[in-house]
Image (cartoon, rainbow, N blue to C red; front, top):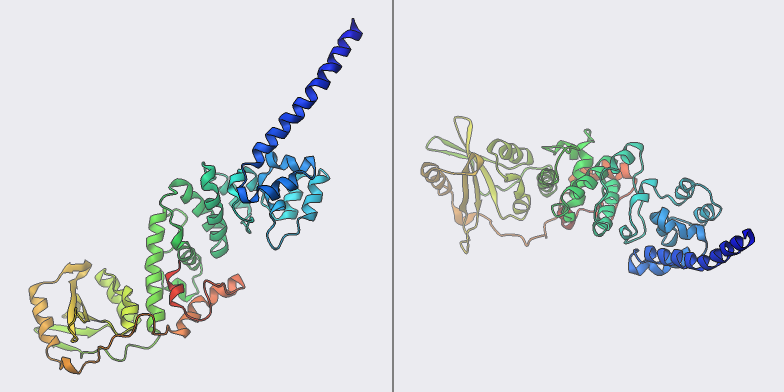
Length: 385
C-alpha cells in the first residue's frame, strides 16, 4: 500500500512539473510585457540568459532594465555576474549604479536608460513617501526627480517628487529648469543669483507658489543681462517738475527694481523693451514720495513718444490730475527730435559680463557648462524651457 502511495506522489509530481514551469513562464512573460514596448526585446533577451536574471522582473524591475538598457557610463557585466552568482541584490545594484529605492517602481516607469539619481540617506527616507500611484505617471515622475537632482540638489528632487504625486496636472515641466536654478541659488547666499531672489525656495512650498517666485526671479535676471551695469544713456526725455510733481528717470537696474518693489508692479519685466529702444520708464514723485510710475513708448502708428502706462501703487489707475501733469511734462520736449527707432526683437546683445557673473558659481559647482546654460549669452536660454 505504501509503495502504491509513493508511486502516486511521484506520478503527480511529474504531471505537475510541466504545469508549474508553464505557469512560471507565463508569469515572467506578463511581467516582461509591462516594460515599454521598444525595450521589451532587450529586456527579454537578458532575462532568458539565466533564471536569477529572470527573477529580477519580479524582485527588482529597475535593475533588470538597467542591465538590459545600460546608460553610456555603465558596463553591466560586473553587476550581471553578481546576479548570476546569487550575491545580494544590494551589491548588484551598487555595481550597476541603481539606487535600492528604485525596487518599488514598476516596469512601466522606465522609458529611457536610467539616469543618475540621488541616493542620500535622507533622500531615501523621504522618497519612500512619494512614489506615484499610477504606473502611467511613473516615467514622468522619475525623469523629474533626476532632472531636479541634476540641476538643483537632493532636497529639490524630493520636493518635485512630492509635488508631482500631489497634483500631477499642476506640475508643468516646461519651466522646471528655471525653478531648479532658482532653488539652487536660494541656497547659495554669496552669489549674484541669490541677491536677485525676492522669495527663496523652501521645501514646504507648493508648486504654484514656487513657480511664481521662480518666474519673478527670472524676470529680474533678464533685466540684469539686458541692461548690464551701465545706466541707460538716452532716456528720450529730461527730468523735470510740473505742478508739484517730479519726474525722475528709471535708468538703471537698481532704480527699476526699487521702483517695482515700492510700487508693487511688474516694472522689472521691461528689460527687453528697454534694450530694444521700445520703452522708457519714469517715476513720478511728490515731496520725495513715489506716487506713480510712467511708461513712455510709441502707440499704434504714432512715431512720437506717448504715455502708454501711468499707474499708482499696485497698478491702480492714476488720477486725472496726474495724467494732466504728465502730459504737460511730456510736451515740454521737442518730441520730433527724439530717436525712437525700435530695434528688431532679439537683435540687441545681452550683457556678457552680467551673464558670466550670474552663472559662474553654478558652472563651478556642477563642474560643467551645460548646453542649456551656455557661456555665450542667449535670449533663448533666458526663456528656460
